[in-house]
Length: 467
Image (cartoon, rainbow, N blue to C red; front, side, top):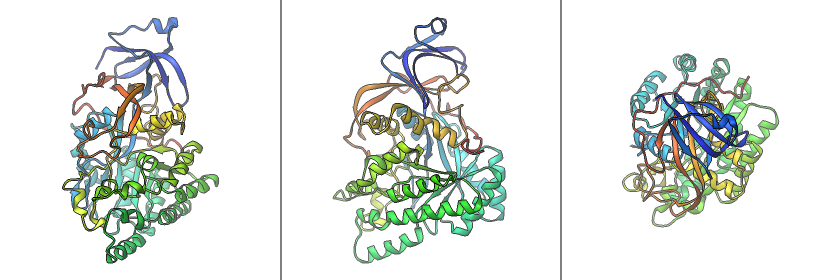
């Protein structure tokens, strides 16, 4: 799309700066910024002007951990790439990185091709892929090199889910050694799945079948142990490591220790661990099943340590791990057996607003909000400064954000294709007003003006935190 857009009078917030500035957009990119009211800003000419007075002008969110249409536990995540990316746009996120899945016995390429087919022509916003590696062998290792070359530069492995995605320590070490050579980044689901399965079996034998037992068997100590083990395997391999969905204070401590040793180890947490707890898992009448995800929700006292980790940069990123399953017909598969509840929560639409609430509540600063939600995920996964900031040359992924609007989160009003909200009834201050994706308005003053197919696949360079 050609033509110029000027965004005038807002407070431009990036990870590094806050400035009252006008922003000029041309041909889908940021063309210029100039302090509001200066001759340079006044000289901007544009066909379209957006008045951002009293608003924040922020980069579009980068959600580096989503699962659209993921097959899991005999069913599929309820958001398609079409519904999920539309909901993301409503929530001020303009780029997702989803996970293509290698099935055991199949090649990485087959998995990647299958996910390209799901996403192509269906996305409202831009997207990239990580690769889930479920079957490490000589062919897989060679394929990893090829994927890095073509812009799939991160690989996820699981210490959990034996029989599905699980990799043993030897397979993990081999993949880490390969990524140390090819520049890829290993992402780790760090939980001791073998030990967890023993506790699951014992709990069910005792008749402990309710959703709350999902949290009780997936011990924080098993998350910490697996995090420690992943760190040491990566250290031996000479590879960087990114630990996904960190939920336990003991796991944060392992990351902090490794970072204090100077190791290239990174950690992500998610809004559910910052705002929800085992109290939700214990809700009666099987309502707790809505909150079953892995790593699980923890007791409330873990929240303070996660916020602290975000402030001290022992945790660098907040992603959603968006993986929605409807309560009716999907979560209900686990009635009478918590181990059969599909694991995952909806959240891609809520992340930017929840983190703004954290600014209001004093947990983080405005710039840190943008850093953990936009800039760092873009840098971590090789998309900066094209994504994640507002600077000349960057894609014009821009959100006009009203910091004073009040909203109540509800399944009645959200746009995710799921029949409940994990944050039902929560009052938030701050709301997305207008969203531009590469200069094109996809949300215009709280109306959806985007379309499936606007979003394009985005190849990525390697992690920008490594030499």
